[in-house]
Length: 90
Image 1 (cartoon, rainbow, N blue to C red):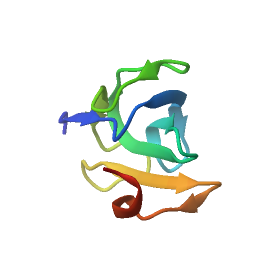
Image 2: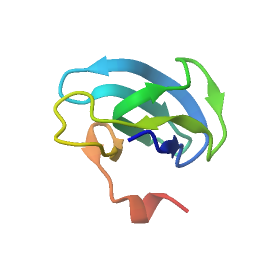
Image 3: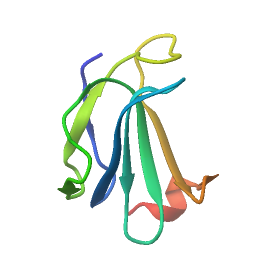
Image 4: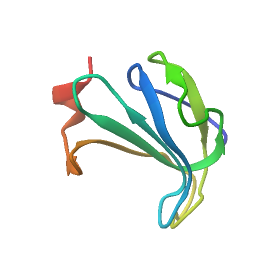
């Protein structure tokens, strides 16, 4: 709980706030047509519209939403289709 969460790559903050199931969430749109979702946060440090570099602190690990204990839910996706992060991220 409280560990800093960093962005996987540069991009634009598309959405911040509470999502059913996911709790406190940040969604980042990246070049290359993919997005990353960081969910179950305890704290959000960015706001919608921010332009960020890779490695920027987005928030902190928590257990908001439908979570059974503190953890980070990270998704990489395009057009709502999950992508394998190993094929996308450096």
